[in-house]
Structures are given as C-alpha cells and as structure tokens.
Image (tube, rainbow, N blue to C red):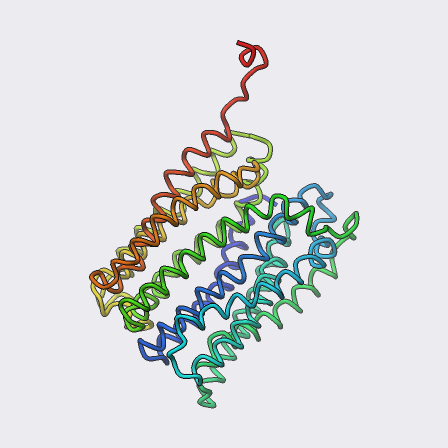
Amino acid sequence: MRLSKSIPAGLLDAGSAALATFGTGVYAAAKLAPAELGVYALFFASFLVATIVPFTLSFLPGEVRLLGQPKEGQLAGYRLTLPTGVPVALVSSLLVLLAWIPARDAELSLLGPLALTAVIAAILSPIQDHVRRVMHLAGRSWLAAMTSVVQLAVAAVFITGGVLVDLDPAWVPFGALVAANIVSMTVGFALARGTAVPAEGDPYSLRSLAAPGRWLAGVAVIQLGAAFVAASIVDITAGSEALGFAEAARIAARPLLVFVGGVSAVLNPPSLLAGRERNRSEGMRLARISKFVVLVPGFVFLVWMGFDWPGNPMRWLVREAFTIEFLTALTIVNNILWGMLFSEDSQLVGGRRERDIFKIYVVAALVQIPIAFTAPVTKSFALVLSLLGFAVVRYVGFRWSIKQLYSPAPSPAANDR
C-alpha cells in the first residue's frame, strides 16, 4: 500500500487509540484533586514501564522478524509471536506495583483500584498494540484503524457510564483501558482471521527474540524507568500536587504525540527496512518526512494549545494544565523534540544499532534524574525540565549513531594499512 494511502489509516488508528488514553487522562484530571492526580501520574508512569518490557523484549523483535515472512503471511504472524509475548506481558505487569512505594501515604481507597486496574491494563495493552502493529506491517492499515475505533468507542462508553452511575473515579481511568483493550483486541483478531494466510514456521522462542530484544528492553526500561524515578523524586521532594500539575500539562500536550503516532505507524516499517538494508538515501528521505510532519504541526499546536487563551480547547478540557504559566508550552516543546526522531529510531533498530541507543539512553538518564532534584525550587517544572534534558541528549546521540549506521564499511585493503 502506498504511503499516501496508508497515512490516513495510520492517523485514524493512532489517533483513535491515543484518544482513548487521552480521554481517560482528561477524566482523571477532571475528577481527581491535584494531589490524587499526582498519585495517578505515578501509576501511569509505572504502567508505561510495565507495558514497554513485552513490547521491546518480545513483540518488537518479533515484528522485525516477521518482515522475513512472505507479505501474504505477515497478517497471521500472531501465531508466531504471541506464545512468547503473552507470558512476558503477564510477568512485567507486576512492575505497575512499583508506584505503590512513593504513593504509599495515599488513601487505600485510591491506591487499590488504581493498582488493580493498572496491572490488568498492563497485560492487555501491549498485546492489543502488537495486533495493530502487525496489521500495519502486513499493509492492512485500515484493519488497524477499525480496531482502534472500537477501542475508542468502548473507552468512551465506559467513561460515560462511570459518570452516569457516579462510579468511584479511581476505578475509571485504567478500567476504561481494560474494557477497551478486551473488546478491540477481540475485534482485531476476528478481522485478521477472516483475511489472513497462515504464517510459515514455528512460534518464535524468547531466546531468539531476546538477543536483539534485550537491548531494546534495556533502552525502554531506562527511558521510562528514569521518567518514573524523576516523577517519584518530584512527588517526594515537592509533593503530589506539584506532580499533579505536571501530569495535567502532560495530558494537555498529548495530542501532538497522537498525531506523531499516527504518522509513525505507517513510516516505521519502511524505516526499519531502510536501516536493515543500509539504504541511506531512503533513510534520509524518511527522516526528512518525519521531521517535517512533526515540526510544522508542532509549531501550530504550540501556538494554539500551549497557552491560556480563550481559543485553546485544552483550557476547558484540562484546566489544571494552565494553572502554572508556560508549563504546558514547555511540555509541547519537549514532545516536538522527542517526536521528530521517530524515523531515525526505527532505522537504528532495523540496522541493529540497539546497543548505540542503549548507551545514549544511559547518558540521557544520568542527565534527567539529577534535574528532577531541582523540584524544591522548580516545583512542577522539574519533571518537564528533566524530560527535556533526556530529549536533548537523545537528539545529539541519534545524530551520531545515524552517521555510524550509514558510514561505508572500511575496505579490507584499508584495514591492512
């Protein structure tokens, strides 16, 4: 499928999926007090850590390996990837409970529902995401879009029902994700089963996937683990309310990453191939496209939704995001800097430069975490400043690694000199 035809489906897919998560965040910001929202932020950060482990350790390496399947067999690739990925998701979901440590002083009536629903959501979310990514990989982006539309619809119904029956707000944000993932994943499997050709070979073993996946898992755990540690530091040194305002700003700035996710869903597979084949011209072309589609909408989004003015819809949806001036704007700047490198990220993975990414992220985490300790002075800004520090190191490091990826290999004669 041509990119011009796939991108609308990718945008609909990522947009619907991310809007489901965004809607739960808006609900949390509206129904929870700032201090309670800070506790939710800790669980959301640990939820991300828990979901990224199966993605990087099993599902993403499996998707890269599926590229070697005949195109017609890629859609049925779940038979090869799920036997390994599901057990990893079950075990890693327990990482959600790390949030209980910094949040232990909160009321059990808040901690219990958040912990239970977040653990279940952490099992289901990476599996559902994998189902949709395989659809994109197989060139069936509209099936992924249909799956995400169902996800969004179920989340909206759950949230609306929670409001109508006055359900305890602690059960709703992650509970809506649980319901949405169960229904949409069932629909996704049904859609794939109706059109897929059986995939070739035996199910992939964890050992075969973990070889490249261990570096990707390390990368992801460092990235999201550092974010969780930074959030915990802000919570402990500046209070849950300061973290709550930072979480509100993250939610308000999220739509830009929704857009980036839609484009990347379509551009990531060819970026993986460009990196794997060391196709510099194609890699640079995709990198230029990725930067353009992030920088232009990012600037528009910054001007439109980064500040407290009557024409900003986020002002009404997530009011707490604008309690502290410039907090949301700086968060959007961080999202622009982060999002514009999604193609290079995939190219490095496809080119087996996972170790480079790991090293870059170690340095970035060593920059991020100390910045979080400025929270007694910078308050809510400490979290976004720490994330910005990580993003700057990542940007510089990726530029270096991409040059290494596409540098011509030295000739044997040159090595003999």
